[in-house]
Image (tube, rainbow, N blue to C red):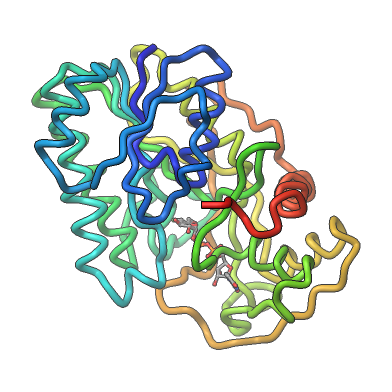
Length: 323
Ligand code: UFG
């Protein structure tokens, strides 16, 4: 298929581009490089450097590429930042996404796949979280993603555009070529691995007084390759709707640090810090719907295996991407 990948220079988008190229798809990446890396774009893919809010440029790019499917990864991803700069999140994750959706509709794209998030659920009353769990976001990041989910539903009802919105839990891990390199890095696993590499003296634990067994937040970590595999399955015609992507296992921040110590064989000092605003205590997925309807099955369900692939990538690329 001819596929346009927005945000293909970012973490998940770069892995997706790699896997799409492996399967013989014709891929073009559209990325502003504001947070992504040019060298993270698979050389087999075409590349368009463009801003997320340039309607004319986006429409022209779509007309040129004539994609059959769009995988929309571009967007801002930080819960904490969204609590300080909500406007940035509504602009970049709603208004800019709409430009891509409009361009897709105008050139007859058959499928639009969107990166949504577990953060749309807010503080769920029970775990595991299913797709029917009420969505009550507690930060602008989750709110903006939910708003765009609703927009997709209306485009489907009115224009018949087939969409899939994947509600990601916590993506982690790497392929041999592509891994996680955010600047600044705020995510837990890469920050813990920086300590193992000797680049940081300690990791900070944001909150040790949560209502969880060890007082630290619990998350459901999913290998980025498994996450991307679900997108490949969702390209099949007839697949449309909302799907959770997680492993169904929750690990606390302290458990993640202990796992990283085991995998790396290095001691990782940790310091307790205050809570980070906007963090829900526990997010664990039920991904039964994706398994049932897409035939999806995670290949790396164990946290140790996820961390091992991330560790291999960080050891090979201690400074991340060169650009
Ligand atoms: N944490 C620390 N220290 C750190 C980094 C993180 O204690 O240095 C904690 C956080 O407070 C949180 C947990 O580790 O409790 C995981 O934090 P991440 O920043 O790695 O991930 P988040 O859960 O905040 O968010 C991620 C993605 C979102 C996505 C969400 C879904 O960034 O895009 O997972 O669960 F929506």
